[in-house]
Image: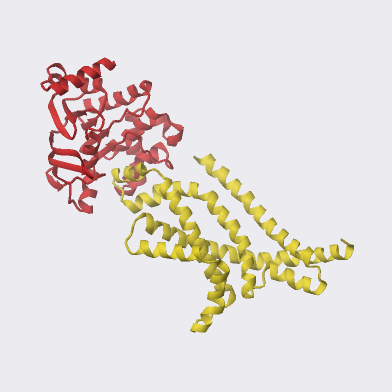
Length: 220
Length: 246
């Protein structure tokens, strides 16, 4: 590795980092927030055993989990225009990532809700609360503790999955690395550097996760 | 005050309750005894509508409820008149002792927080748990948790409190503190139905004893007669076996 490559990596680092902050992080956070909302609703209609909605929820999870995310991206971004629905790249990616987070995390949340002992719901009934009051005030806060580590896992997974947005022409970290390397042919080093940016983001998230877990533990 | 008529319940093909009839007067302390699997707990859960009976009627406080068909609204109304204490305490794990007591008052009773807190503190005081009001259930012993659970039940000012084997999950050293709280409530005239294996409590605190087996009431009578002059063969046998254990 000569000094030219080192210099190139140093000058490209802020570029990759800034694309990460401007594209990857917003894409992750927006998709994850919407996705968790979808996941919560999907999990709740299943645990509450709401007819019809429950079946729709199962169908949705089945479709999303059973097909590759890159295929879903192609369907939304390249496929929908042919039936008259044209979406820009960023919204397309947000839709696909949110639906994916929604499907996977709904199973996490559903399992966490089911892990709360049935006696908690019964105790809620016995003090005069109804199902939803007990759900919101007693069951979900307890389920959240259980769901937190696997949900953090999903968030970290999503940070890396956003690199798939490359395939629908979103200029994110990987695409930027490729553009820079196309000029100098230092593909090896630039792709490694792109990986490093993801590694930095994920390390920060892991650190935040363990801090928050400790804080929740103390409150108990 | 509370009357049960013709209560029936099966789980699949197993008959758990066969035509149960019970009358509870105001201020009564009723102990329900019987071997495991006799349907005692199921009966209590049917009264609280944690299980739906297959048939039967309940009269409570001048109102009549179908144990099978009561509407959601009726069940909700009825539960406000009942208190329930579980074998496994079932305190809300994410709430402190005081919050456990005030939660129902604030959320279901639409009570102002200050008012609920003062009722909650009085209830905790009564069970001797006021000094632990900020503790979470995981920081309390079993006996302490059960006393908080009793405070939670009495804070709602119910007509009747149902106890489902309140000391069965406790080690012998801790049962005393729970039983003495229950005796205190009984002395104050609280109407209570207690499913229990504590013969001493049934004998000394209960007004009446109901002995159940295989889903039927085998014998029923005032506590003194029940223990001193049991009529049924099965009751005599049960009392003898229970005495041997002591």
